[in-house]
Length: 146
Image 1 (cartoon, one colour):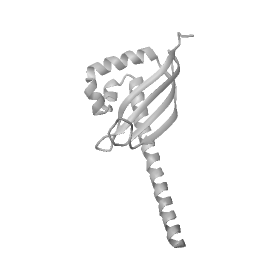
Image 2: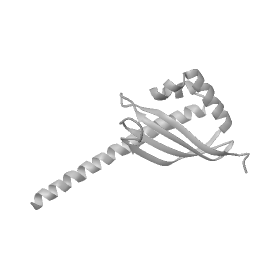
Image 3: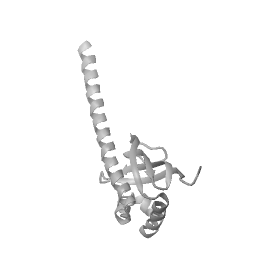
Image 4: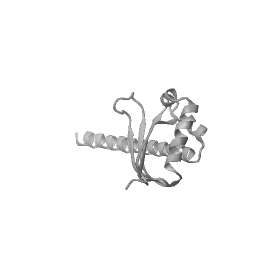
């Protein structure tokens, strides 16, 4: 009986380590895609950035409209000065969304025209196991605010 319990604990431990390894890999891969996407929008590579959007996001915004909107937003922010990851989280189920692999990433960003700027990315793995931008949000205070 003691050997069975030890064997079960060993199997559970191996599974847990393996699952954590894959979770870390998913987060790392999604973060690379997220940073690439953010880099594209920060350097006016809007067509490239549009290609990384999820089909759900593309259905809401045709490319021409999305490019106009994101360009206006980047003009409001000004030049990027710095960006650091402050939080990363992997989820296989996100509330109100279909099952899948999701990675939420929060960045503390410093732009020329903003302060206390936080950017949020939600990435989703598509049916070809490629990470896509499912949602982008932000909050900040204008440099003009006191």
